Image 1 (cartoon, rainbow, N blue to C red):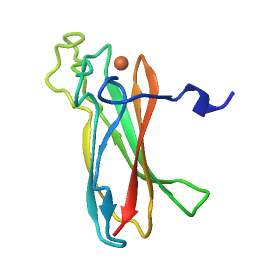
Image 2: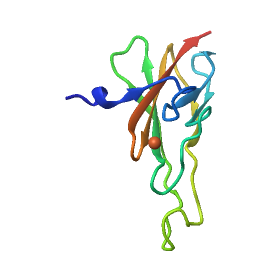
Image 3: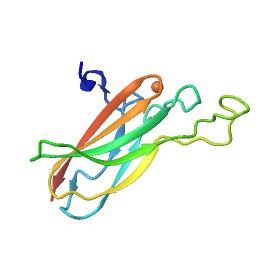
Image 4: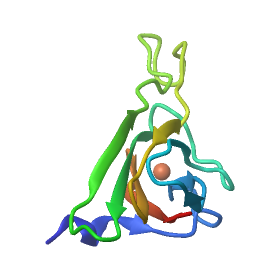
Length: 130
Ligand code: FE
């Protein structure tokens, strides 16, 4: 099998696991812009010790390139685990990240997210050059 066969995708407005990418549709080549990544913008995903988003990654696939380039990886490491027991810890991280990105040409931002019990998900957004 190939890993792509088990990466799930869906409209993030209807599926709480699908990564949400918020970025300008049109940017200037060589000028930094902000990309916001999140999960559960429309439908909240649980954030408990037993069930949470463990990490997200952001990539850029240039339109004229056969390869994809990793822009960032975000580990969400605190989910209420504690010596007192599950969900009784002092800290939680929410699955949200802000990344400043610069591209030289048009392409597609691709995000992946990993739920510890519901597997891998992906989402994408095209970026055009002004
Ligand atoms: Fe889940």
